[in-house]
Image 1 (cartoon, rainbow, N blue to C red):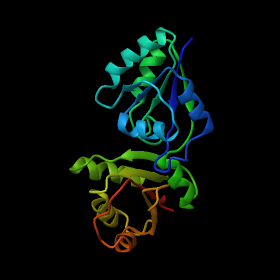
Image 2: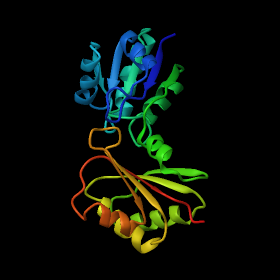
Image 3: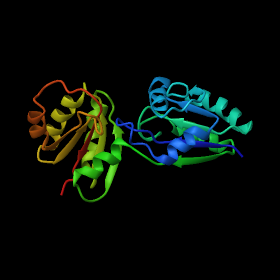
Image 4: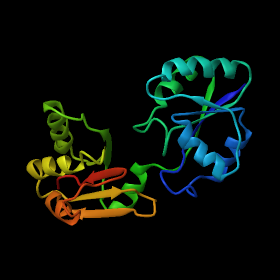
Length: 222
């Protein structure tokens, strides 16, 4: 029976892909992807040529039907989100759910994720909650953030570059003494890590417009 492979891809450095992932990408019949431009760059780097199919957040359920049809024709399919591990604040969960319900096997190929990268260099001990992205604005955002901060866990959030300063200001109001680590452009040429309280990181960042992909880990309240 054909199989859907969920393939983790690099979050920046194209060398951060497993040998197994490259083997599967070479062997499958089709590669479904969140954005063909991102996936094609990776495939070109490793000289892999396969038909690409679109499967992103806005068409995931519809795309799943087409991929299930291919699986029923005994065609193996790999799925890659833009970077990191699919379904970890990326599309993929709806696709997996649909494929499982259709009776086909789904196999994960572990690899890079911003979450695991940040946790590995945080130095924070204890249990960690992955919360992904906060609501972008309004009372719902602050309410959700306060709920996370009240839990007895370290918390990892993803944030867009144009909202990271806002998040630091919110954390400075809600938990000014908590230790944080912020990772920017992790694994890329100009990767940076800032450590300290929200106010200390705000000052260390130069209070400037911060560009790139960001993740932030908030130490639990001891």
